[in-house]
Image 1 (cartoon, rainbow, N blue to C red):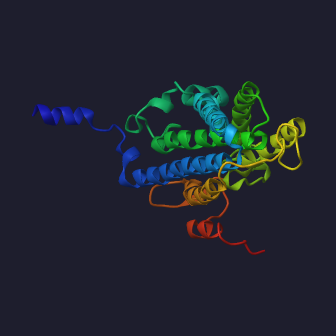
Image 2 (tube, rainbow, N blue to C red):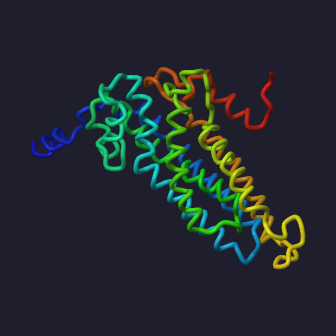
Image 3 (cartoon, rainbow, N blue to C red):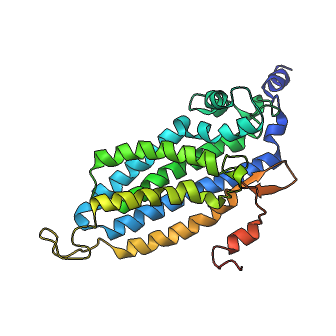
Length: 289
């Protein structure tokens, strides 16, 4: 009797939050997170294989520190910023501040167990949302890695780390604006599939500015007094890195879906029509006109 009473007290208050169907969705989003880590490993190998032997350790260490700076900043407040759009869409009172309170690192929804949160609140599908924090935080870190790829061997670490903090905040704001079903630019007709705006175009734009300031790698394209010949560390590692990047992409693409209701349907975060099979096959083929 005591065991039965304990189990009754410990049973979920909202079991619909942890059904088999919702747990399957959790696996989908978790696979995307694994894919992001695989892509990170690929990017690291691409760079490590291409830098000069003397700079291998420094290049790898700086990228990993930059990754964790972006990861930590997004965990701290970035996901809360991304969620602004839904708090506005559902007409929550003081939507921006309430989203911060609910989803910053110490927020209620960021730390509660899903079965203890009423799905009628903004905590619906809480497990999915909490996994998405890790997923998007990983890509905030990857943004910083992409930035470092453009300035490898040419930027002081302290300057790069400061840029990492700023980039993490800016990519959070851009994710709110462009990546989601109710973001400001989405409502204007801008459809950002796969996070192209805040994960790829954003660091590419910053890279164009940074490269003009720091110039090309010494000895890469022309003789240099201190670097007469540019000899990369191991191009085989670069090849393995490219393969890892393409291995992680399908898992990430699969997780770029929103499940509107268990056992019903899923759409991309841009509200565009989608199909898992077609999304996978688009990796290896050029879409027809």
